[in-house]
Amino acid sequence: DRGIDCLPLNIILESLVELYKCKNSEIDCQLCEAVPPNKATSMCEQCRVSYCEGCLKIYHPKRGPLASHTLSAPSNNQCVLKHRGGVLKCSEHAEENISMYCVLCKMPVCYLCFEEGRHCGHEARALGTMYKEQKVEMTSRGDRLKDKKKNLNDFIQTLDVHVSKVQENGVDFESRVVAQIDELIGALEEKKTQLIASIGGRVAGKLDILNKQREECSSNHRMMTGLLAYVDEVTKEEDPAVFLLISSALSSRLLHTLDTWIGRHGLLPEENSEMELGLETSDVLNALNRCDFVKVVTPIRIDK
Image (cartoon, rainbow, N blue to C red):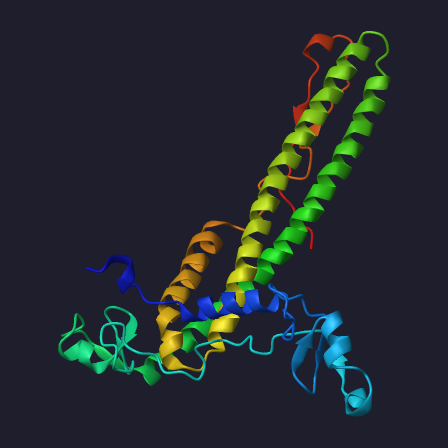
């Protein structure tokens, strides 16, 4: 009824974004009177104060008792996940702590939600129980996806070999064709040019298919890497309520990735690295106008 407002907050993701921003932001000098203050260039590890170059010379000269202090690059040590150590409140009952889990809605709520709220009549489970169950489930799916990621990485390397083999075999086949065509002087010269051009087109077509397949695999490999990094951060969460806010959706996403992309795509090259062609030269003078490639079917080989 409340639209987007009723969706559960992804606190872990929000905190990770803030943490990343904080780590990649510049630190202001804490003693500058200028507005805005200059950027800090040093931080005293004993005083825990960040200084720009000017303020460092004025307020922290390297003499007297300050001479023994250690200066380092400025950093913000308060870049931590904001929610850790806090208690989550119910979004509908602001005074109540989140203490239970609604199985139907797949979200943590307070006890009043089951007594008088929109979760009334729904199956309730203990946070600790759901935390353990979903953490085990997410870890298991994450491990499966790691295995699939490794298989995909191995397959990408196989595709690299196929790309190389297509180029090598293309060059080799071209050399054999040139050697055969060069035996047919005179009338065969024009035909030789046509055949070489045909080889180039076939090699280009194979390379285009394999390169597109590799790019798709690489894109999915990068997606899996990001997803697994996020899963690793989520599984570090020790607060059941915070974990359960996102665990169901993230676990479903893992399953969706496993079932859709991994299950739908077989790890086989879409194009054979062999040219699948040969050249017949017998009676070529009498059959010059009919001269063309004869197809040689070869199975796809996976080089390991």
